[in-house]
Length: 239
Image (cartoon, rainbow, N blue to C red; front, side, top):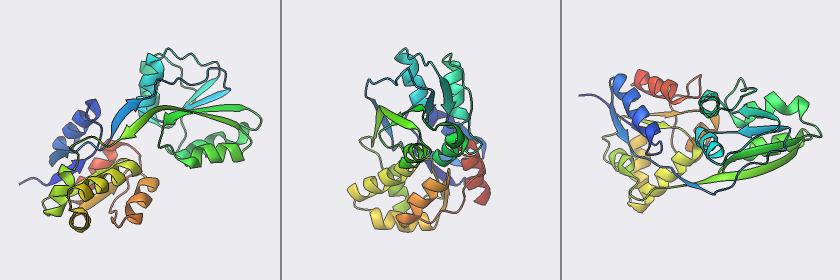
């Protein structure tokens, strides 16, 4: 019988893609979306020297808003860059490390005295805005969307509590938080954490690993590349 691997991507093409990836790796996919997108209707400034986008969702929303940037466009990673390109935007650069810290390292030497627009969700890391400000940038942040926990989330928490979950793929710190909140709502938080201790837990990057371990969830694997396919492959390989 195939091992069951849970993932927590939004209930759209991302969850469908994740299910396909996990199945192709020979595991049984368990989709338990922990993030739902609530657009704010806001659009980024258009007069910034540099605009940073940190997600595929953000790229899709700025396109729908008809945003027309005057300066450089920077994407946090390949998925965001791909969505921007598909929407017709020129992507000027992508950092070597697909993270907030990677963005700061990429831009720190050239932002002093310049306006930098950061367009993202309401749960963006202060590492990015703080790091750019420390480098001398005039940072403006636009919240494009809020990330909320969907009603009914928590099937994977139940499976972990029942020790029927073999692997879990966490793609952000917020998916960790929302899984534990869902587990608490169902009265199985302690049992779910114990069940995850017996499973192979993967985190897409160091911030996600830190968030999980700070909440008592031991992380077994972090892929070299911060994308879901690499994460799922690392979890299944460990299994």
